[in-house]
Amino acid sequence: MEPGIARSRGHSVARGSNYLLRVGKHVKMPSTSTVRSVMPTNKEIVRAAYDSFASGDVPAVLALMDPNIEWTEAEGWPLYDGTFVGPQAIVDGVFLRLGEIGDNFSVNLDQLVADGDTVVALGTYTWNRKDSGEPAEVKMAHVWTLDGGKLLRFQQHVDTAKERYLLD
Image (cartoon, rainbow, N blue to C red; front, side, top):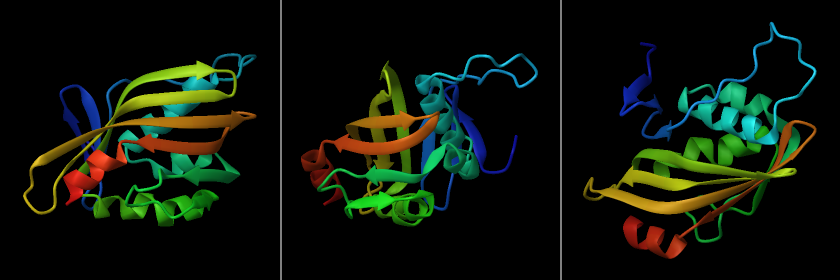
């Protein structure tokens, strides 16, 4: 098993400094050895982004992003700071700050729903509360907009009232 990667209940788990990201389902992208007359679907691209997070492959996630991607966390969410533009701003403003939410932070993907250039990811966030170590969970929805096979826009929706209660 690779360092920093673990398996838990059939899920891939990528461990960071004090967070982890988990995705429950895996989809393989079409093999490059086959004739590629069809591009991956937007749903497959978003699934690949979550799978790359789960395996700890942040460069692969960044490669799926448009250079001018717009990433907006929900107002009231601890990482909300307006809209981040560009992959590096997302790394600095979101990915490297996940530990501020709590320990063992994870994204648990339940469903992807696609319609044209929009893909909605439904699931939960889980973490351990900093003060007590008790588990916490909130439902989330991520709305992705794609263009030309690249992640162009991300909008997070989460129960921020429950999240604030769980962080206090």
